[in-house]
Image (cartoon, rainbow over all chains, first blue to last red; front, side):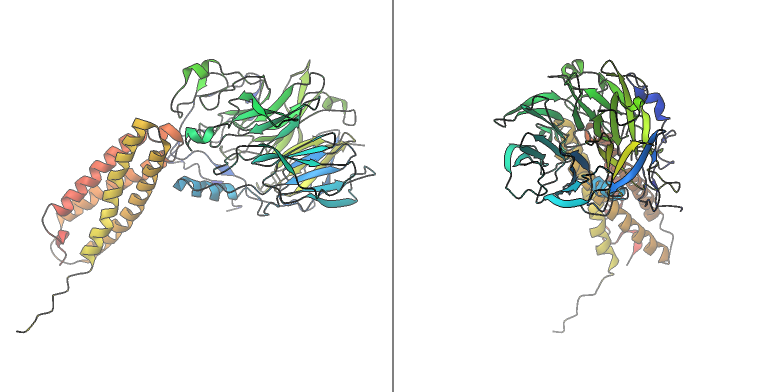
Length: 430
Length: 145
């Protein structure tokens, strides 16, 4: 075997077409949706872990990519501070309890596609004061966290979204380490199952509110409806009191929460459900309508009913909101950042970047890249463009997997890679 | 009065009886927990089902292979009743394995309707095999002794 790629499509058991259609037909506002299928063994293909060696990802024409920093312990998100320092979040994902024999098999298979480096539950600060793309300073900024993912700074208050709480720390510009104890602003739904554990965080433009993404506690309610209380939604949190309310619901696993410059609207990228086929269900990017219900678990892409859910809720299906923009199925978008500034070439200045961690639930790999979705008049317009690709090497192994993305003070795009444990920095080619 | 020590019987029949008790119990039990799930949509019943199916199938195959191997090694008259019983058991266990995959889907359709039907077929076959094993009144069926 050329590599340890696990191709468990089990041809004898499953039908054809497990590889999936080319994803281009499924991006945009009106994706093709095939008929849902259920399998004895769902199509699975997890790229084994490779190494970059001297190679780097492939940047789009007009762009250049460099290794900004490495040797992290599970680099999942990046957060540039106003003074130019960059925070790299290194969570240790919680361990899910084994509830069925399937849990053991799934853990084993997905483990092939993850770095063997264990997370550190900390945040590392990088300082590149001269902006040359080579940080001179590096320090442990915050330690002793609990599966952190989202970070948001409002004035002198730094908020970290652990998997079980938003915690506030005092921050002074230029600080390289926070030792002050944090204060819990709002507890979040965490264990004991904590299936989708990443809590994405963003502050409103006026700084009065925080938005936090809370993923579902299962693929499609297989851990019981009770486990989904307060899950699969975005909370709006009052920064002064910590009080929260549902801002939007039915979002299976919302990440990359971002405020759109100009409109000041909230956007997110969402990981949709698995095991209905290689081309179902499309993951998407959407503006988040206040009070909106986006279907999970009862339906997908508007009113497409999921037969796996009991009780069925035709009343909820009827009010399910259609997302704005399909990124195609199983790409696993985990990071999103709007364009800003003029440092990147003109064609990357009016849209959004999305970090696609990559698929496991289809034969042909999908995602494993960073794309740019062009916008016009505040709405996505046109097909996604590959910004950073080549994460799957010529040997079929994953040399890296992109997660969080952000634009730094200079306007360069930063990309967290949780397999290589590197932060990549993309600038205009000279 | 002289005492005669009890005669030691062959080792395999009691071991086999205990081993076969696992698939009988578990695969019939899975039908019961499936019915409970279909009536309640409480996911823990479906979890019980899939563990019962996994245990029943795993121990069932071990018991069947050992039984068949011993039967093949045994000399004597052809044992057609034992062969038929083993074929029925093979069918039961094949259905159990397929059913394990169906039960590994997520939520409702892991049980209703496919899983429930497969559990019923599996339970019927394993009960038939059990009947053939024990209805003879022969503690050591299939001619071992």
